[in-house]
Length: 206
Image (cartoon, rainbow, N blue to C red; front, side, top):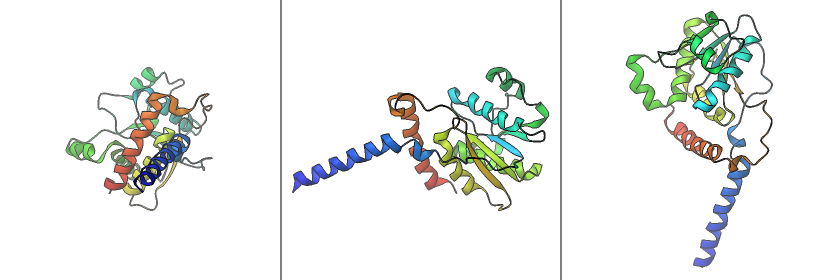
């Protein structure tokens, strides 16, 4: 009896591991394709150093397709300006600075921002900027594995039914990798960490 229970648990564990390796990353990637026009604002969620530049470049490409579309970086360090992003991430051609909005954390909200987590804080800041500037529609740009948690953050943060959001993965147009994603240690750890953050999001995003 004990042997059967142990073997049953073992097979269940192996099944969970196999499912994670096959569908783990795909289950997190839930972006909108194709995007529905029109939208007024393109929002870049901040990412790891090795991904942030590609997120910004993908967002600039979307913003560039319309002459009156704006770019928003919701929460960035006060020392960073748009010329810094253009130079550091080699954005060419750059978006005009007057069409770029960089959100800054408010001093009174820094503790709250840290407690809520970056994505939820960015969602709340995005919504605040949209209300202040009169935007009604936005495309949220982030990495594919981050889309599901970004959706959750915006669903929990928005209280105005008049605001609409679409989600675009900056890596959606890239060629699929030649090897299995979980053979890349960085990708494996990033996806596994994302599941913990997603679980925390369901528990704490209010």
